[in-house]
Amino acid sequence: MNAAPVPLTDNRPAAVPQGAAHTHREIRQQPRLWAEMVTRLSAERPALDAFLAPLLADPRLRIVLTGAGTSAYAGQIARSALAAATGRTVEALATTDIVADPTGCFEERTRPTLLVSFARSGGSPESAAATELADQLLDHCAHLVITCNDRGALAVRHGERTDSYVLLTPAEAEDQGFAMTSSLTCMLLAALHTLGADRVPGLDACAASAEALLAEDVTGRVAALTRVEHQRFVYLGSGALKALAGESALKLLELTGGAVTALADSSLGFRHGPKAFLSGRTGVVVYISNDPYTRRYDLDIFNELTAALPAGHVVAVAGKPEGLPEAATWLVPGMAEADDAALALPAVLYAQLLALDASLACGVTPDNPFPDGEVNRVVQGVTVHPFTTC
Image 1 (cartoon, rainbow, N blue to C red):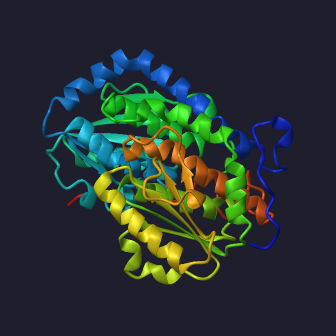
Image 2: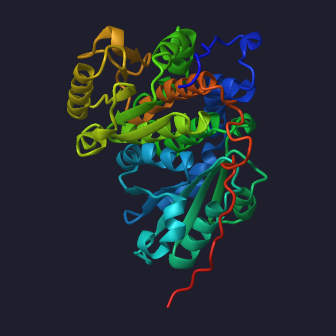
Image 3: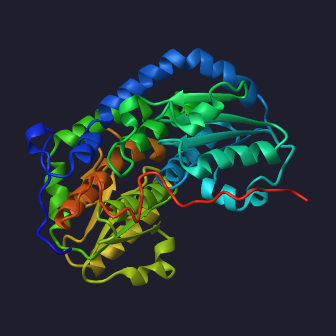
């Protein structure tokens, strides 16, 4: 990093860093918005059940979770938890993959499918194109659209369809800052609650966990890591937490305007070549699974990298402290028994805060890290080409 880091502050409005008003607020409002999301889902439960019950009753149902960028990570984080909760085949496919390779993504034309689309704005060209391709290639496709924008193209296109259900987050979740923070977690929470109901352990504890996390000296811990002036970061995890690692790396790249490079991988996969990314100025965050078996692999790579890198370069983010040194562990309060998909919800706040602090340290404006428009809040420059089958 090029400049001395600017330490983050608490929730007091007067302490908001310049150029970070939206991002600062949108990170810290998440526990409140999650509570609002749960209230909204409770009110919509009868309508949701009426829409979903006939679909979920079919044992052949395939559920596809889709989105682009951060929205794609929402599906990847939720996938295994929703497969266990529904007993159905659940896949996470990015809209960018669907649009580029529709026949590869929708090979079984006759298999009934529920396409769950995550979209902050609903205005990305791939969002609508993915739903249209699913309709074109599948005999039976229903749509659950989870979005933050009731005026977006995706919500408008599916709002009146009987084979679609548009589920809206609280309006404040449509982040006004560049990076997706509240939008990601509200949409992820909505999917886990809607399709997982009470079958995802720890889901009901997420808001209280995030509140407790933000009440601690989290910003001091984060600033201590960014002050090491790392040139690059590595995020590692397994299963749902591998997807969280991917989102964490993306957030750091976005908010620093690419000034800090970041890599994400699985705890086991990292040794197979990507470990070459390490240098003496690399910071590492390892997300530690709550699953007893998976956790062993996360602890192995954490211990290996702690021994290999200078002190203070490696931290663990975990729901429980067993097997971890206190000084290098960022605990997620109240999530010791949570499913990893639920654990990811409050845990991602650490990644968001780290990206924000690193952005300020680099002299970048977090709310708009690309003032010249080379990267945009809603993707631009995409041409969706007509698709025809032989």
